[in-house]
Image 1 (cartoon, rainbow, N blue to C red):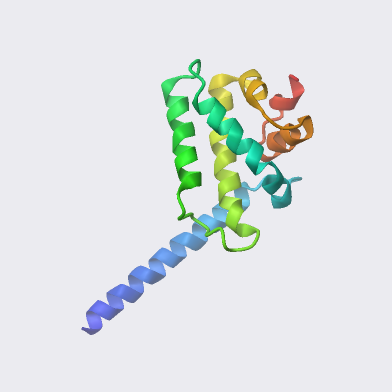
Image 2: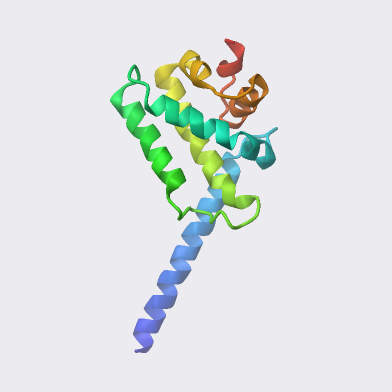
Amino acid sequence: MRLLITIAIGLVAALLLMWVVLLVGLALLHPQGSTLRDAARIVPDTARLVHRLAREDSLGRGVRVRLFLLLAYLAFPIDIVPDIIPVLGYADDAIIIGVVLRSVMRHAGPEVVRQHWPGSPEGLGVLARLCRLPELIESA
């Protein structure tokens, strides 16, 4: 019985340690010059952008699959960092959106993203900073 308790405590501790390491990794990926408040302001426009891009037939199947997986992750109620945690709850979503959109930009180009952006030019600038995509603004 003691061995089972020791194993259970070890597993919980290992999972907690992996979660903390993941949080540190997400914090390191956070772009400089942008705040989570900026990210929260553009979340509705970004969700519409991802949905529009996922339905774009001219994009390759692999790109569209990544976008649909992103939409599924955003819709799934269980996150890496629970959304009920103030400010940090949406950080994982913002960072994962940034990583996926960087990948989409490499394949689709900035013009496709700009064409489907539903928000203001200022919001697109925030998105470009958060995703570390200066070419999104430069080629406008």
